[in-house]
Image (cartoon, rainbow, N blue to C red; front, side):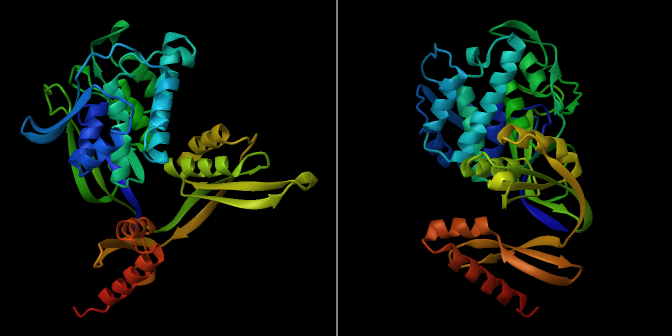
Length: 398
């Protein structure tokens, strides 16, 4: 089997909301102190965070509450929310994710209400608790070093819901628009099971929506909703681990395009977006085009079922007018992980093998970088020590 890094699988037992997502990640081991530190750099006050354990039909879960300490009377536009997030002392990756979630919310609100995106007032969605939920969820996901998100089909509930626009059917129009193209699940629970904020977060993060993948579980978290469930616990479960896939031969698609009028900064951003959305690999190659123009070939390897998603992302993030496709067969080694213990901490070693024969082994770079940052060592030194320890462990007597 091979492992593709840390994957989070969101099991929507009874729907999803922003506070439930944050709570599930905290329950799975994200640090509340680090979360509060990151959220504290947002220029927002007048709220308190309350995190506590609750019991939902015999199941212990974490509850994440944002309590307002004074009334919030003003609404926010997308531009104001984006400026708020960009000014915070949090990583660029978290900023990008949070801004994309709000941009999706603004887009569907504009479509639902028939107005320009700049005219959208975020009534419920732009309130303090939603900003905290969205930014907090992105911070917690980064803390847990999640590389890939997969989600179950999403139950939406039934009936009606009251909001600033009056009484609306469930799923609320914004939620329904966000879930276009996403499998939804039937449920015998009534009420609003999935909120616009919950739908926006999961549909922005998730690479696919399906049953749980083969994985080695490392962490499990339960996030509780505000109301009790009628027929089942009102919780969102997150399962975190190393996803397993069989080695051997498989078909992949390579998407390519030549670009001669885009800055390296934007190309690098495009590569990051593609990898976040589940591309198997992204590479750049310098070329010379007609009239002697220096240019770059962007090459993206993906699975056949990801082609449309990847092409749409390439068109939206680059200046290209066309993308080439080619199908290839690739052979992969079985990939597993072993953990070595150094004096300074632990490092995972990625191992490539066929059957009993090990062909290659290498330390996980992110583990080494984390350890280097914590200790002041160089990344190169951590990598070398990890490999020495792994080789020593291989030759220990049984």
